[in-house]
Length: 89
Image 1 (cartoon, rainbow, N blue to C red):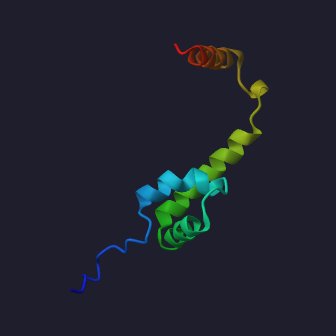
Image 2 (cartoon, rainbow, N blue to C red):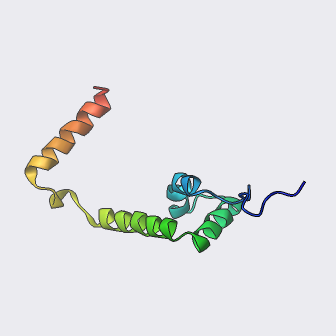
C-alpha cells in the first residue's frame, strides 16, 4: 500500500524534536546521524533556523557577562537563591 505524498517521513526531525536537541547540537554532542537529521531540518524550516540563531546569540551574550555586570540588589538575590537551592530548600 502506498502512503500519501503528505505523510511525514519518519527519518525527518519534527520542530519539537529539534528544540529538544538544540543544546546538544550547539555543544557538538549530537552523534553524526542525529546531527545530519538536525541540519536537514534546518534546510527547510526557517522558524527553527531563527530559533537556533536566538540560542547562539543568548549563549554568546551570556558568555560575556561577569559577576560585576550585575547590580548589587539582583546579585544578592541570585546568590541567595543559589544558596537555598544548594541546601535543598
